[in-house]
Image 1: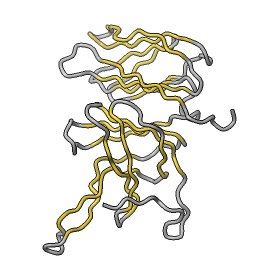
Image 2: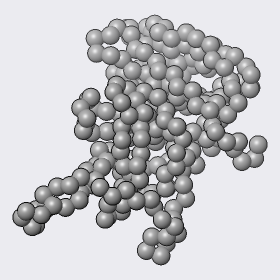
Image 3: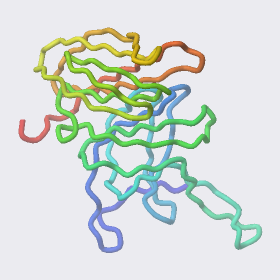
Image 4: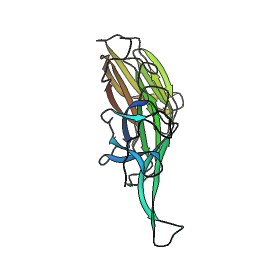
Length: 231
């Protein structure tokens, strides 16, 4: 298996700009996912480590039109008996968003080692989400109500919403989440207090285990490692 770093010039073109990334997969059971980002034929790829249930350390990926995640594998050559060929086996793909800094979330269909991945990319810089903001992703089968610093929103199944509370650095503010128990009737399952920290944003994944009555929220804080331009 060949791992190659994308060079500063492919077929006479300049290398694409870099995107700062933190990655996680859900459900977050097991060890890290060791994947590769496809960057071209001939075994070209970049190693990508995805953490279970929490954001990985920050790393960089080239801004390609599409990110294809998987691994190069040796397969029998269908055109030459007794020979093998290197094939990129894709697990999941996504189009990166415009933000210079992104969260890459990989949703597994099962706990099998080679399970397909649904890949989603979300902006995690000031162009998409202000400091102190939060992204709520509803992975349950029903609607979720969210109240952040007095602002109330609803999130349908499979959808996400970004909330930028009207708070300042150092402020504490209440949050509450509600799940539907009957038509027009909701019950709280999270009541907490959050803190508006410097360059801090929050990823909130809402999931529900099979047979469980109420959902659960996995709150993952993210502090941007460098001061954004203009501050």
